[in-house]
Image (cartoon, rainbow, N blue to C red):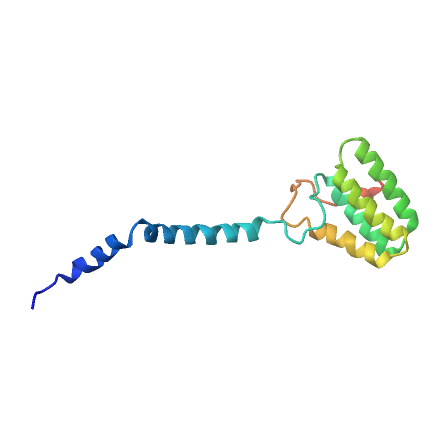
Length: 146
């Protein structure tokens, strides 16, 4: 009975398998990596645009508070503040439209829905936007800017 060198059998099988089997593992790894990156970076479930300025965060807080307290007078002040900040270039069009939609919901008497949407707007900012050095409470709407 002839003896075979067992160490050469796997090498012969690998040589017969061809180039496709060598590409399979890297392709699978690449596919898994792409899925993971898509899950991490895809803005799934986000309804509102990223905040582009400190003023957007101030307005988010003010809108939420106005909706929570059902305060129409505050909504008037917020709308005037939004117009000023937009005119000065401190607020983007997408942000302005998002705030307008939330305020319109509140003005329609759907205060709870508007409050929920204002909160969702702030939640959508997690992991997005720019971090600011100045603490949130200094010199903003709560100090009389609205």
